[in-house]
Length: 164
Length: 332
Image (cartoon, rainbow over all chains, first blue to last red; front, side, top):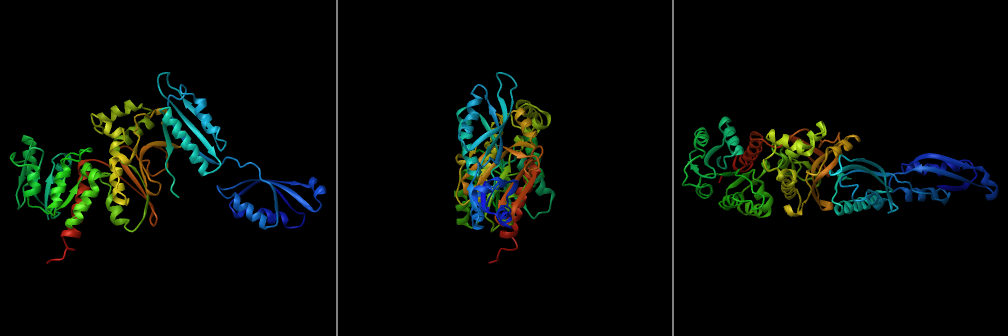
């Protein structure tokens, strides 16, 4: 995300503190001095960070409370991951289509695929890694995969249900 | 306390052996198999009945039936261990209903009647002020029903996950360990005597689904039926799938799941980390209970066997003796 703040001592620390408060992890801080001239006494900073699921809105509120202006929030990257195993006639039922049904949602994608094909008449087995931005999106992606599995007669092996 | 035993299969015989060997304060006053019955209000000789069964294939008087024992026998508790019929629950269901109706306690290992007609049986027992206990129907020797009803009393059960079929667990273990195909592992399970000649009931997940129904009826407020369970068996699994799982430090096991809040009632192969407590070896059973106060509890034990099943039945019998018929009972 890109932040705009007053160019005064303590401001950067004030802007970064909320990140640790919501359990985030700062990956990079990019200080853009060259933009200072055009903005007078303000300073722009870009931060790359990792956040726990569902904490972005809290972070935005906390940073704003510090009097820091958020200019832009970049892409949320896919952080929620699930591995499943799929067994069936994966190739003859258009593997590309199976993967694409997840990928074209825009909120989830297949980021890993290992496939074993023993013989042409036998069923194949594959391990699929699916990533999504959050839990709800992951559940939706799994629903799509369950639908595809039903339609193409696959056995879908999922991890155990999670209990909070 | 006087006990009548219906059924002289491996469970019935195992139970009689244990009762005759140990001084548990239990007197067997009647025994019946599918062809005959024997009754004596002062107690029958277990050794003689076992010997008769061994020599001629039936235990007593062929003019008497199991139902005669139920309706005319002298007993405090009926032990119903006849073969299970998952579809109708019979003949166990009629035996249990008739005994409850006579105001007798019932202990059973018979899954059919409990899975089919739990609500009706429970109500009937409550009306007559007697107990119906069925520890031996789920998880063999594991005291899961006692744990749910007594040990975890007052807890809200959030979820139950179980490995409830030893045959399936054995097959999956062998496929993972030796790279056997499903067919090879099944054949081996048969040779070892772990799988029936017709393994459909196990490998299609029907047996664990029936046990899940019994567990769900025990802790879930709403009565459930076998038809409410989403069932997937293990017969489509490949050794490739198990290998792909192991590459990620995971494995595949047939898991029965009940999660009331999400309406989930399911038996299906699931992916589990190798370090998960439900990843048990061979024919073992394992059950994890998630509750609001106690947190997570996992019980692991032998899921089958005549003495193991007898252990569960004895536990139920002594519970009835101690808390209902015995020292806690007010003398009139």
